Image 1 (cartoon, one colour):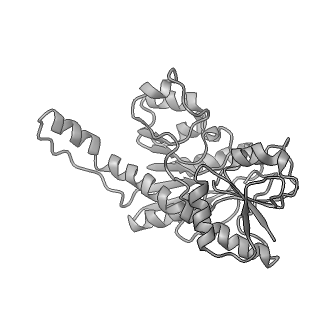
Image 2 (cartoon, one colour; image 1 turned 90 degrees about the horizontal axis):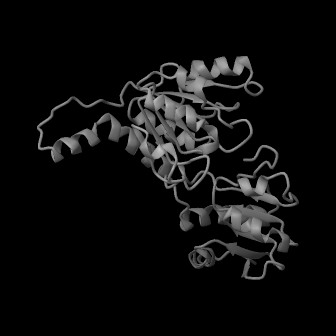
Image 3 (cartoon, rainbow, N blue to C red; image 1 turned 90 degrees about the vertical axis):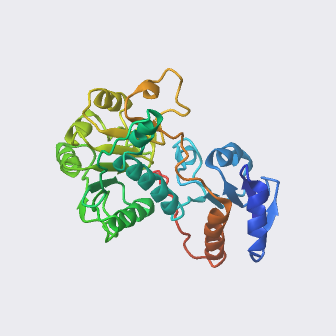
Length: 312
């Protein structure tokens, strides 16, 4: 009988959802030495790994599993992460900010506070070009939302072209060679909005660097809901300070939390949201676990298996 250990701050709620699913033969336990299945936060799973001597499968409640794919950690089990559940929340976040900026909502509020009747014309998303750094399940959802607003969509992704809502695809070849840089700059040229949903890997480290930012139009807005390692933060601050970038919306950072001395706090046209763009809701994650558990019991391949070498 499979024995499941739940390692989350919402353990009671997760257990309630799992028990209501009435999964056959599954027993929820509290002793890590007996568990062969784990559902939880990556850091909590990492902490318990030395005690999980019978572990066969671990389901992360997050998309990012960086602590568990570190080369120094064991890899003798199946690791799956949460995918296909964050697209809706990310779309609300990203397009909330796109509309906030296009409709000049901050300017309207400031005019109201100053008792000024200002009728500056708003912008529109229709006809604008959105660039997606990464076109996985989240990027695909963002692309679909963009088409509802009549936007043109570009996607920069490793290989896949599975999403029909992307109008143009751009692909790297082997790392940051001259050819890749040229492709990146072609992708960036003419973008009105750039959204990064990249995972944390060696290949994505500081991909958005000074040269990349220079390739963007001065009015472009950069939004990062992926991982903070993908951005050269000093170059981003410089671009905003010098007016070479319209604005930036950052939900993730190289180091979290951001220190009180970090220049981001006083950088103009920079909006920070403290890693809150998409929350792991227990009911959503439980549905994914239930689906994978049924596959596990049938001996079939699980959904969203993490490649330890690639890191996602």
